[in-house]
Image (tube, rainbow, N blue to C red; front, side, top):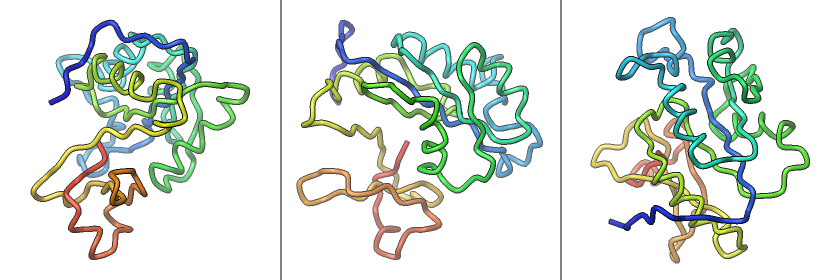
Length: 181
């Protein structure tokens, strides 16, 4: 386990993209997934509160169509609509226009991860460090049965080659237990 320093700072500007376009269909609910309450507050509100602790210059929330409540709860941050849900990378691309002119690091988090901590976000921000050596940091976890999760395919030297959605994975990639969190 890596120890997280509390005093991490970086002069590199930071933007955060929050992916919040999921409908929650697997939850059997008509309420958008990110609006489901955890400990009395919508998941997206908890994620936004945590994101704000890392003092980003910009926050862009990617929402699905017909998600007016998610847009409202995300104010005053920028929201963009992902009309067609074509995966995680497609959702991130939807934020491109809202980041025009931004020069710095970009942290992508999911709106349905209310337990992500500011320490974790700070550690990821610090790991990027505004340098070309670490131009990508991915938070992942190992599962014995990773069915349903995107897999992180790594090179021999440990670098990330790709993040492959479960439905798009080859038989070989389905054996990977390192999942995108």
